Length: 208
Image 1 (spheres, rainbow, N blue to C red):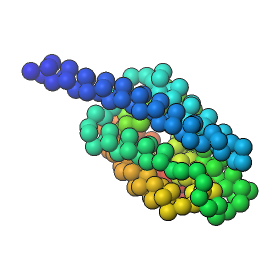
Image 2 (cartoon, rainbow, N blue to C red):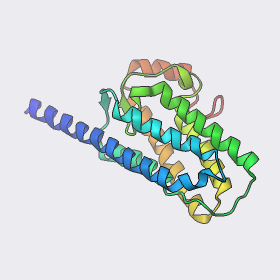
Image 3 (cartoon, rainbow, N blue to C red):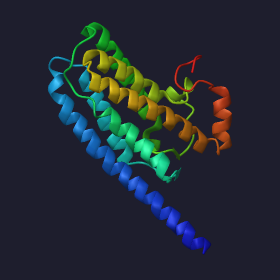
Image 4 (spheres, rainbow, N blue to C red):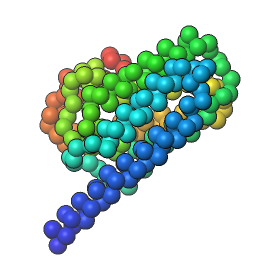
């Protein structure tokens, strides 16, 4: 019975990994299709598109490891990623480009730096493919999410609408739940426990 249960768990984890790849490819393709027309008036959008393509590349060459296969963690991981893609171009500009562009570029650069730090360890669901303590992870434990929030604020100021506000509120709520679940999963590794004692901030150095 034990080997059978172990095989079932492995099969479920493999299915989650496959779903992760398919979902990110589809969602990233949607982002490129939706936002590419905005490249003319808002050239900073090209950095967002580059970050999405880098994520797809790293997911395709992802190394194996231990990752959560629970329905809840999978749902919030996929939901949080998909939610941010529901933002629509257009709306009302609450701030000029010289304010929104730096926010979008800085946020995307931070998220991209986190992906480059993770490289083949990048994924959507909570996983342990080796604890990262260098690069962007020297400053906060979840730099990718920090970058996403800055990026979201910039886009919301550039394309403000009730719909986009609701989308980002949902996205941030799911992001918060993802942080909790990822930390719960990784705290099973003593190396991550030691890392968390050294890098105490989750999202903003010295604050959160």
